[in-house]
Length: 198
Image 1 (cartoon, helix red, strand yellow):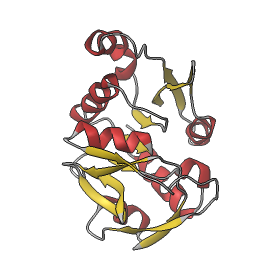
Image 2 (cartoon, helix red, strand yellow):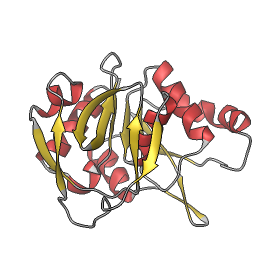
Image 3 (cartoon, one colour):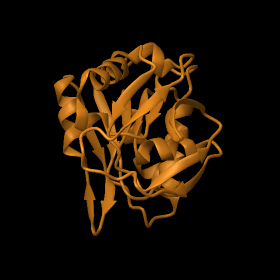
Image 4 (spheres, rainbow, N blue to C red):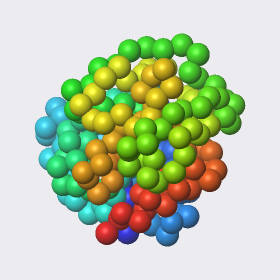
C-alpha cells in the first residue's frame, strides 16, 4: 500500500518528516514523497502531480511552517475521492482552511517537551471512537491555530485541537504530533488510519 506525503518547504529545501516515514514503514506501507513546485500556478501544479496522488491508498498531511494554495487543492481532492487522510499540525490546519477555515497566531504552544497539555475529546466524534478517552496528553509545536472551520471539531483545549468528517472513511486532523509520541493513543490513531487503507 502506498501512503502519500507532500514535501514541505524548509528554508531553501524540500523536506519529509522522518518520523512519519518511520511510521509508514512500521505499518508495512510504502511512502510516496511528492515534491511540489510551490512557485508554480496551483492548478497547473496539481495537474502535474495528480497521477502520483491517484496511486496513493492513503495520505498523511505532514507538519510544516506554511501551507499554499496547492495544498488546498490536494486536500479537497483527497476529500472528494474519499482517500483516507490524516492531517498532522499544519496538515490539520490545511484541512480546516480547505473548508472555510480561519486561523490566527498563538504564543506559548511551541515546546520540545514530550507532553505539554491535555486535550478534551468530543465523545460524539470519530476520534473518541478510536481512542476511547475523554482526555489525553499531547505535545505542542505550532505557532498558529484554527479559529473555525466547517469540519467537525473533535478535540479542544481552549483552541481547536482536532477536526474530522466522520462521514468519510478516514478524514481526521490533529494539532499535535502523534508520530513523535508513539504512545498508546498515537498507536490507536495510526492503527485506525492504516486499517482504513484499501
